[in-house]
Length: 258
Image (cartoon, rainbow, N blue to C red; front, side, top):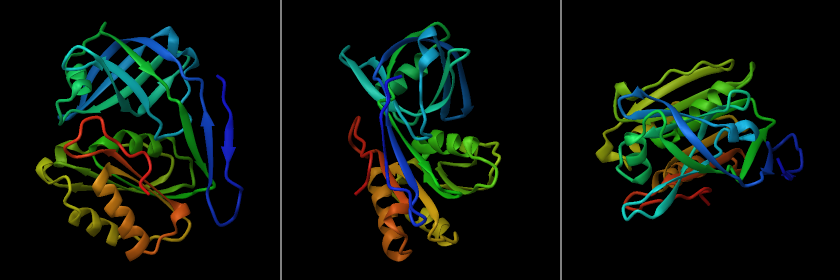
């Protein structure tokens, strides 16, 4: 791996965010297993010798999945590496299958033996100096939330809010951290309804040293960030918000909400 890093100046006031660049590689992989972990969340395990040097240091990293588009042209979509194992050459990706884009279509049709190409991650943002977390996200962010929870260390304190359609979409996560998991239900037709998410956040105590991570539909993530910085007066260095998708737009994401 050819990596370089840029690290913010360590400070007792701010978390440390190390940005690590990786060599950008394409990897030819094969589907090993396809499993529904909830009715609308499909887990696909990929295998291949090309994963022997795969690296993903951040729990919200993304790889590019290269799949055929509607016109036969190849298109790329972002997915979080849910877990990986270099020794066994395995990479797990979770797919929220509510929308029928090219990646969802590929996932629904994938079977053991199906070939696929991935690229990346191009880089990782590794957060350290944090023991208190609040994680907020919709179905598209649940893989990153689950990975953060499962990779947390003993002594961490995590409160997570998962926004899904109903109880059938709730997942369970094992963690060494002290975890409080809250599930907010809203129909798929109301993805921009902020009220239940804000109500859940209203009930959470936010100290100045709590790192809040938010990922959802872009307008929702932006509104949550506004609520946190204005109504809750949460410091910007302790907040990261991303729009993982944009309603009405294909392949549209905002990696960092300003």
